[in-house]
Image (cartoon, rainbow, N blue to C red; front, side):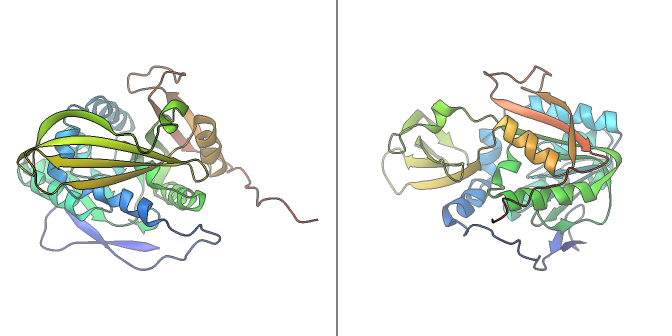
Length: 302
């Protein structure tokens, strides 16, 4: 496993000193498109923060949950601190894990503008959430805003969930939220552009035309979204891929159960509404099961 080591010279930030973890057996060959789709969307923190500046319901939900558990909190996919900083401002210790150096640098910059007591409550570590070990336990572990959807293979998800269990304090809670797959969305023509009005790109400093293409792999259940930016008035454009594994509700329930989690609550949004056919998100609040369900190893040969 990777053991977390603080990064010296940067207060409130740390990183994992990487060490190769054992490779799980029978993994499918990595798809470079999916690998790029795990990184590219997070290489421009300025645009990321602009794109999701109005998203706040999940922040309020996780802050309230952190207050109920009393902390400390571990957040996977901490990014630039959209959730972690409000939790820290509420008086709770937050450790964050992220694979994106640019997003963690943005978090460090944001922390510099916070009061000293908030800075002391936040530490972030760069590393792989499937293997990074922080050597401590938490009352609440959070995996928010589709971070879980970057686990494309069952072995990836199981390694991560094992890491969550090892980081949970006795009686602790694990909360995650992911988008709900809708068959009509997954059946879109991959060659058809879905366009939005022009806007000024905050980091490029230019007005751009924007389009998205959706290509779903029904065997691996991964949706690849290609975001295309074309500057108004000409000039070279660029594309940003984003890949998300699609977990259906019953599938995710089984995956959690077979990896030792019991769902305390499942919501269809951050207001506590029930999960239903029109829900766009599913929010799970779980605890570690007393006796993990015995896993099946697959069919035996005759």
